[in-house]
Image (tube, rainbow, N blue to C red; front, side, top):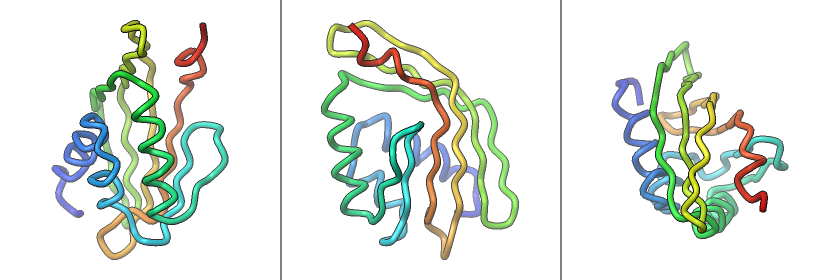
Length: 120
C-alpha cells in the first residue's frame, strides 16, 4: 500500500457500502475505532459492525482533502457526507489514522463527529 491510490480505493469501497471490500484492506487481527465508539477487534467483527452501519444509512460519500504517509502510518483528512434514511444529508470533516503492517491496515481510527446522523 505504498502508492497513494490505495487511500482512494479504500474510500471507494466504503462509499459503495461494501463491508467485505472494506475489510479486505485490513489485517485479520485489525482494530477499528469509529469516533467515540468502543474499538472493534478482528476482521469478522469489523465487517459486521461496518455492515450494520452501512445498512442504517442510505449512503455516504468521502471527499479526500489530503493524506500523508510516514513509515507505517497514513493520515488522511477530508469531509464525509452521510445520507440518512429520510434523505437528509449530513456533511462533516473527518481525519483517519491508519497504521499499517505487511501492506494492510492493522489499526484504523476515525475521528469524526457524526452525532447528528441519527438525531430526530
